[in-house]
Length: 115
Image (cartoon, rainbow, N blue to C red; front, top):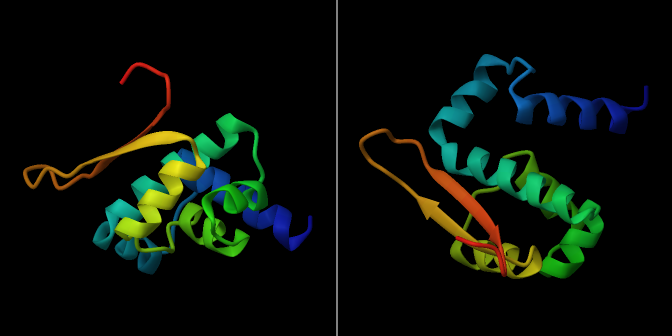
């Protein structure tokens, strides 16, 4: 199995919750749950559109490496980044941060779909 294939398999398992993280990685995710929530919705929307990371990156005005970092929850989302993702993935992006449960919820609703 090539390195890329192993990485892709681990990412898929991690997104589905089947892959145990190192304690350090788990701590990073607890500290930035917004990055993990964004990773899941971007990955799912890109797959729904049938696009590669490179194709999604081009439409978002980013490079493929940035899409990879976003999907790997290794990118801290900024407002300009969220705007580019929303436009490039042809979807409305909504973020709900509730200080009570401290779990951000992110949705990407395709344009033309019921919100």
